Amino acid sequence: MNCTKCPTSTRAVIGLPRHNAAFCKACFTTFVHEQVARAIKAFKMFTPEDRILVAVSGGKDSLALWHILLALGYRADALYVNLGIGAYSEESHRKVRHYADTVAASHGAKLLVHVVEQEAGAGIRELATILHRPTCSTCGTIKRYQFNRAAVEQEYDVMATGHNLDDEAARLLGNVLHWQNDYLDKQSPTLPASVEGFAKKVKPLCRLSEREIAAYAVVNRIDYIVEECPMAKGSKMILYKEVLNRLETESPGTKQRFYWGFLDKQTTPAPATESMAEKDQRTLAPCDTCGQPTTAGTCSYCKMMAKAKTAAQPRA
Amino acid sequence: MLVQLSHPHRQVEIKGPKRTKELLRELNLVMEAHLVIRGDELVTEDEILADADQIEIRPVISGGT
Ligand code: SF4
Ligand SMILES: [Zn+2]
Ligand SMILES: [Zn+2]
Image (cartoon, rainbow over all chains, first blue to last red; front, top):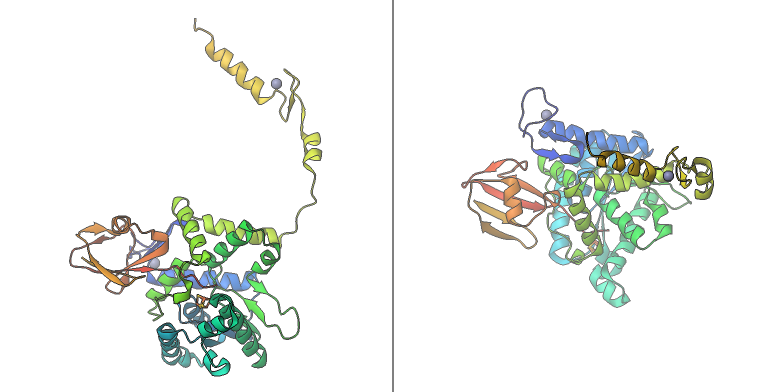
């Protein structure tokens, strides 16, 4: 497979069925940067003057996001929250530190760190046990709080997270399956700082699939933690993603149409609606052959029967 | 070829030559959820992998919120 963009035949490193394309390393990196730039512009996320705080976990999405924002010339620092989940937290912390020292520092960007154990006296698994709450919901509350607090206290203009197309499509599927209407409102890639003390939040990777982001990290030699947080095992999100990926394999572009279609509906005001009865009254009239309602002069049943009769005539 | 897999971390020996696409199918893995890396370079689904290649199949799905 060769790059579909290069004039000379360069070997492609990734095929993108949903875009009918395949890219070499250089063209793929350009493609990813363009997708992020488009999201930033379309959802009015931030400007080159804004100070951005990226929420990093050591995983592919957040480190790739930090990398892309720095490559595009934005002023982006990062915050890492050490959750105190044994080897997983140690390893992810090491990866983030390594990236900050070897890459981000040369762009003048810095890493902030919050260690849950230092403030709460225990890691999140212990906290969850004490509080009789699921670990992931305890974790979510702590992360949301710490990221928002750092963003507001240190006067960042906006907080960016690494949520990708798969995350958003899976979340949308979950919200639709359970008709969580109030959550649907919060699925926009840009959430404004609605009240004092709430940071503006953006998701610049919302146009890119999880696979594309992982590929970007490999191509650009970003050393991220491949191992998952041990608490993620068997989560509903993973199930939804698997289902969506099966659909995607059968018909490329499904995830994108599902999520972007939802965003389109959200941003474009609903047209003045005509009821189904009104529409029927405007468009239907009796069939000139049988009298049943139809949008055409002769209804499709009568047309079909007429055709069948002609075809059935014995040929002379 | 030696194929390294994650979740859980393990290695399997698969007979080459074989296309990336067929390798994934044989292991019952979906392309959309994985990357195939030879040495330290990404390969596309139509690439032919040789017996001597070192392959990593890396999952890309994460379950975080
Ligand atoms: S899987 Fe759960 S515990 Fe682990 S980082 Fe995600 S939300 Fe936190
Ligand atoms: Zn190219
Ligand atoms: Zn009729």
